[in-house]
Length: 317
Image (cartoon, rainbow, N blue to C red; front, side):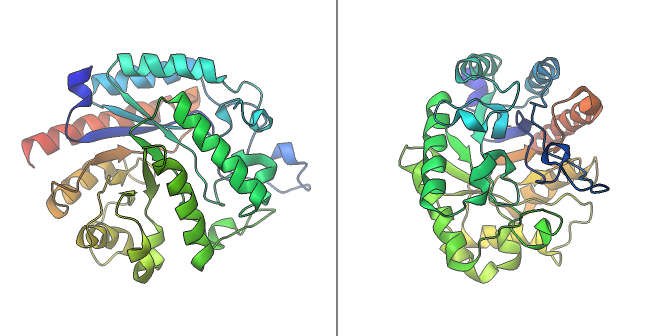
């Protein structure tokens, strides 16, 4: 296990415990007749434990060495049990799972997405953004999660897609921008870093605000993401890899099966060529599917792509 965790590159997989992150419109919210949501929130946990176990074992065998766990409503936090849904795991149960994960050679990393586009898991507090109450709750949750994970190497804070365009179907839309977005980002980063954990975020803010990105602390790990098949620097999503490299940020490029099965291996090839070895920390696979039997084939396919990506990187293709 120790040898696997000491590999220079992180080969990570995003695994969902909680999944209430797509919208605030769903059957649990007494929607008007005819109103539907593609990914509605639920009042129960959407995580099949048997598949959870299978994914972790398969990923470790495929050569993976890190799993980023999107927690959300999946934990019955001692500091804020009101955020739990039916079936949420207790902190003690999660700790036991983390021990199992480490035992098979994977490094577990916590993720709580504080983007206002993906924070329905915060319950009523998602409508109290940037208030004293909100900051207090977020501070409590970050501290508790760091304790549960026994001071992890990283803490993924999300912070993606916080735009009006991403919320146009929401019943309640909330978007921070300009100085307030940076203020809250600094708040989250500080809560993590003062506990000797490194902050990690999605980097899409740079797509539309490249002139502001010098404000981003160099300590924050960057995960730009692009899920297509055409890797052309003219595309703002692809250009971001170059901009982050030029500005000197550590990166963990992110691929997915969302649009193309081959995207992950293509991401590996492209980023190995254009990001300096000292700033390329690894790669992250993100299928963006719930940990449910319905999506088992997608998860297995995503893991196989990581296995291919590792081989491609090691062969120097």
